[in-house]
Figure 1: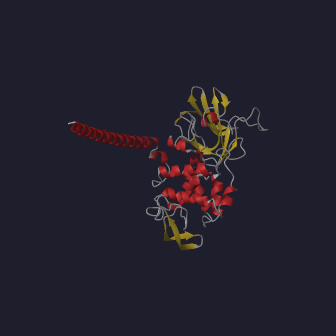
Figure 2: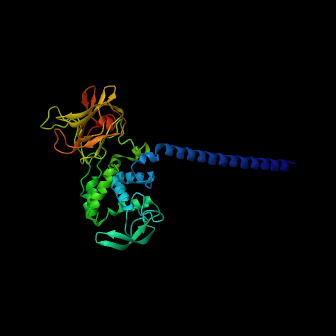
Figure 3: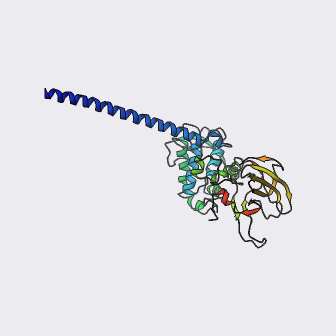
Length: 357
């Protein structure tokens, strides 16, 4: 009788254990699926295709993320790899750039991360030739192969000699693409000017001032503060707030961003244009009232795209860089005032209290 009770007890215990185990597994799977769904939904909320405005449809968020991650690790400008991809593959993607080859950077065999090769005809400076190209499992592998080249000769000496952007510490984009061409990346004598033209027309320089965190929070937020950078296409920052210069008293009242003539300038935040016109000192300038005593000023434009009384949105283009008024070269003077008193723009561009490093 005792043996029967024990067997019955063991049987019931076994069934209970099995049911409990299955229940735990079911709940675990359910939780995992819910987490995945939430994660996927959250990712879609963070980054949308609209954030990639100005880029060809075949360039994805993952590719832009890879460009920015690589830049933050190596200093190689994101604008350059994106610009080369667009130039090499075209707006719709070339045969070599499209699946199954994924070579969006025209890289010859044999490359890091390649999963095979393919022979195709290509244009060189001396004419049409047949060449062997690397193929890749995906676009990101192709981009990683691009970056890997520059750790070796003949690239490494030219690349490391490039000047660096004083704001980000990354390599200057125009200098970088010049170094790649000098190292033999392409034979077209106009290759550098073509890539720079793509970077300008597609506003790719903006990506050089982003971090992975900026991308996760939406590509429109170039800085980490309240303002969008007013000249994301700048080549370097030529002067800083408070800098003492012999031709002015009291220190510099804003930041100067050197950039080629015609580079877009953007409204740092939503507001109303209170001035859009000419000043002997500021040249073609714009003043925007953001409310609560906060004002921004944008000076020395070659052309203005807004008029007094206009309502502007954060990131909207308001003009083009120039050298009008009292100016010694093409740049944007960006000034921020609180109740009429100039303050360091970095307070709003990079977050509270961030000064020149």
